[in-house]
Image (cartoon, rainbow, N blue to C red; front, side):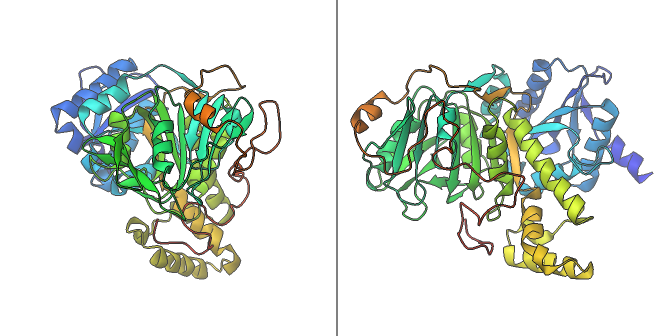
Length: 453
């Protein structure tokens, strides 16, 4: 009877009977209370030609998530876009949502492809929904270790040393002579161009911004008054005005995907910077399999997976490994995770292990995989066909002035191989998701979890 009541509490909007369409649209109760956000859900429904009504669910209770799961099960949905208001899109909603969407059938992995539709405002979310054109990525930038030679043009600046800045141009690496004082100008010059397809970042971050240096702070990219800006080391603030459709993978950033309000970086990046898919952590980072694993799956085999597929495959691999190596851990919920309390989390995991006579040697991997299991979210329409290009092409150079300024300089970071090379890219790619990660990147080189991003 309780299960039936939970199902009946799942309201729907619209008049059509549920059909067999594989795409479903859901909206949280708090978002549905605002007509502008309900319009976002209806626009998503129209975009995908869904005959079934929009599903409303209570995001504040287990019964609400159970009702969403039951409705998706009955509709045989294989993909779902979930509209959340930015004031109610933090990890207290996204983590139970991740767990619930693994319960549609009997296996421990996720049972639908899904993504969260949100932004700073309903208007920004509507722009996200309205975008449908596929994107083949050929221009990339960021601070994370990524295979630069996969792209026609790419830019990388070091998290470790603020003055290291490398462009990959026509198969060669060029360092334009950036200093710790001028990195802000350089980052703005890279980011504020008519087209960038992919950002990949690591290092210090919170919901309030991405630092431009890890060991040596040199400014930040942060939200201000509804737009993203580059704040330079000397205090100057330069807005980012170009908003080409792009994806952003926060592979090693603490909290970069955590939408804890309308002015969080992820919400503003969708609103004003053209981000149409964002993969990022909702907690502090230390183990790294969730973010770096997604980046690896997305870039290692160019064009094979969309970003949503790479994220889902990586998440399923984490859950699958937990279920295979430590049965029961795949569904374990630890309250201290929600508080970003790494110390208490480790103690609770250790106690769980002791009760089951699990060897202490397993502690780091078990705790790390559990930490990352619900930690990385996908913001965007899961149907978006966005992929890394399969082979190098002839995309116009977005940074000709920087290349000209840096021509002839000796690179201060390892040279990237040419387009036809199979050598290791520069910087080095993230570790394979099939192996245990090296000491965490983006927070600390100490293998003990760091509680500060």
